[in-house]
Length: 243
Image 1: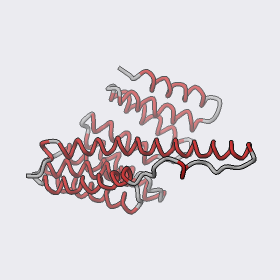
Image 2 (image 1 turned 120 degrees about the vertical axis):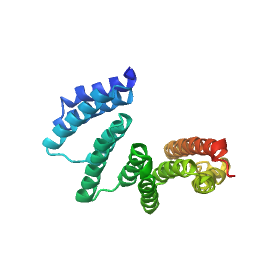
Image 3 (image 1 turned 90 degrees about the vertical axis):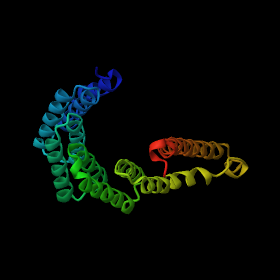
């Protein structure tokens, strides 16, 4: 069953796009397909995503095509159509090389590893190489979220191939980075208070700016806590405990 809130948002996006351009309309259709695929209607969702991407490109736009191809590959992997999924991954790499935009390169590499691993147990070496490449790319880009995903994928592979110590060591390293961010959080108090001034309007401005900054910090800390909790569960699980 399609998740109604997400489906409604995608439908609204398509409706609003009729007042704008074909680019937004095809993107809206694409994400309608992604919502369908994510909700279990894989075949219809993939068909809609492919059709929307084709129209999107025919209209002269290639922006974020590698991202859209990665989503299609993900759905194809869930359908266990691995050859088509890997073909979509290869196409995404081609887009990256031609366009030079590498924001999604690490994630595409990670997806390639997951696809290879799911396709054939004999492809473990190639999958491991893809995961390690994704980690290297993420580090070069200082993209910690991508590094976390790629490291987790590699750690699962290492665990399943009897290298639990190495898996724990890698996860502990990335866990330590996020955990340091929590330990070094600045205490709230008088030091963080907005500077007093006789100008009431100025006080209001500083107070608003300070409050917004604090909310952003709180959201960042909450996100890091969530990541750390997930990593801790992996580290503390029996399967990941070093022998």
